[in-house]
Amino acid sequence: MVRPLSSLISRKAAGLSGRIAVPGDKSVSHRALMLGALAVGETAIEGLLEAEDVLGTAAAVSALGAAARRDDDGVWRVAGRGVGGLAEPDRVLDMGNSGTGARLLMGILATHPFTTFMTGDASLCRRPMRRVTEPLAAFGARFVTRAGGRFPAAIVGAVDPLPVTYRSPVASAQVKSAVLLAGLNAPGTTTVIEGRPTRDHTELMLRHFGARLRIEDAGDGARAVSLSGQPELAAARVRVPGDISSAAFPLVGAALIEGSALTLTGVGINPLRTGLIATLEEMGAAISLTDVRTEAGEPVADLKVAGGRLKGVDVPAERAPTMIDEYPVLAIAAACAEGATRLFGVGELRVKESDRLAAIARGLAACGVKVEETADSLVIHGTGRPPRGGARVAVDLDHRIAMAFLVLGLLSEEPVGVDDAGPIATSFPGFVDLMNGLGARIATEGSRP
Ligand code: S3P
Image (cartoon, rainbow, N blue to C red; front, side, top):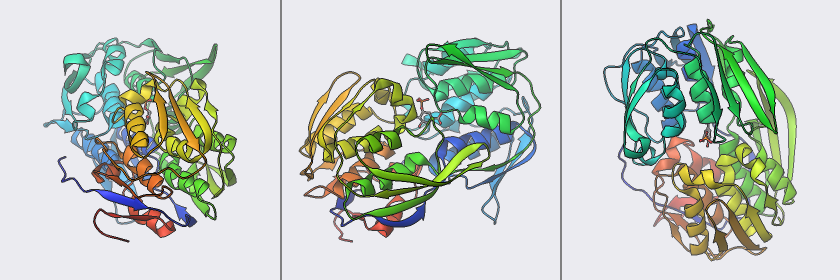
């Protein structure tokens, strides 16, 4: 999708206060549409994230024969085709900006006996796909990609798929999920071993739809997930929790501005996603979880945060998978905290929607913050005083870089701008209105709120 650039500017705010719900979880939304497409019967999804990435997946499953529609009650319904029941699409599937949509769907298509062509935006076309094409080839699928395993790609699904055992060299829920989803239409048992546990939404939702999974400790912190192939998945009702990765932006803004009092309702608190909360608490943030409950297998709670002063901390590499999407906004918290915050083992950030390590380092330096960057670590030197700000940050098709630097503008001495607000719509439509409703002052550049 080509959009005109629209820039935003964020100015100092007195606080973020109120009680709000954030939009639905992106990871859970993609998976609900895909498993709904592979189930027998009609799956109903409440609270689906209606953002570009997920709408792209809804369009893709529809093009594959599993019509996904939004009804007047706001519930999405997917006409499932059963495991192995998808049909060859008659056009190229455009997955937009979405690595999750693309990689998980490649897993499903690897064990469907037809050819699919897939592409995406400039960001997706520079991201590595070999991490999924390599294990998926073991099922018998073939892939034609651009140099370096890049999109666009053709996926030639296996006619007689074989089950696979794969030890993933990267801590990636997308790789794990792609292999498990491919294993759905292979006979026998497919196993993925991950060195460190990553988000387990695929496993939880597979069980919710009736698949049989075994999850075992594989020693040294590793975990093995085994799936019995060719199950009959039964259509289910899914309630999508609020996205902790979206909640992270108002949460950090409120934690940093004294006088803030914010409640975020119905946020997913899957323990493999809550590394940011643990880190903010170590930094001294006052966060509490109330009304903890379980919805469609996922733990959910209301998060309360009050503003205060934060101090720098070390964030160990082991924590990275549980907060991988939250580093951009954590870096903003670190820039405002007192003392150094050291982020270890974060090389994966270089292959997200943009090279996030470089984007964070460049943006913070432009805002007057001292930063040291290596291949896979970042040290941010906060002074305990608000950073200078006063820069216009290049977003480079990355929604989280845009939102993180708009949070910095709420605190910095001078306003902070971002050159392209468009990518925010991939994950958090309504971000600006929601933030301004809490007390932020984010406006189209040139106007004043
Ligand atoms: C996701 C996994 C993570 C994360 C992404 C969503 C998922 O990616 O960054 O935003 O839904 O499985 P990786 O698997 O590349 O770490």
